[in-house]
Amino acid sequence: EGEHPFTLIVTDPAGNASDPSDPYTIIVDTTAPVAPVITSVFDNQGAVTGNLAAGDTTDDAQPQISGTAEPGSTLIIYDNGVEIGRETVAADGTWTHLPVPVLDNGSHVLTVEAMDAAGNVSPPSDPFGFELISGGVA
Image 1 (spheres, rainbow, N blue to C red):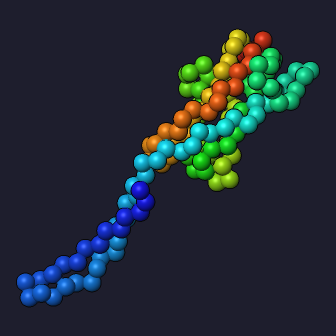
Image 2: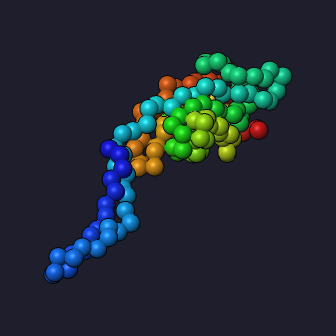
Image 3: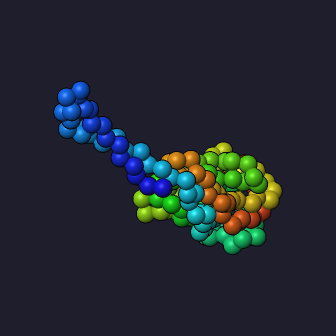
């Protein structure tokens, strides 16, 4: 794990050595990010708006999904186990996603995973489930 700088020194037959080259650094990263967190699913459509609680029913086919994850990682958003989008996690560890296309009527269970620059993927977040009663209309 970590940075590994490599340099070269050339030595001629007489034993004269060159100055070291500029370092070429590789980073070994075999550790996956910790599981990201879905902190809110926000309904901003219809008569009742605000943050949903797990298990709620909504009429918003495009709720704003937000949370936290490893800064700079790529967040992968799943609905019922199917990828619905990706976002880059901000330097402060926050992310937001607005589903496009809009979600369909029915039950939805959201989970997210974080993938770091080395391709290591986190465990999934805890699931967040809700019911949509008017899908297809944003």
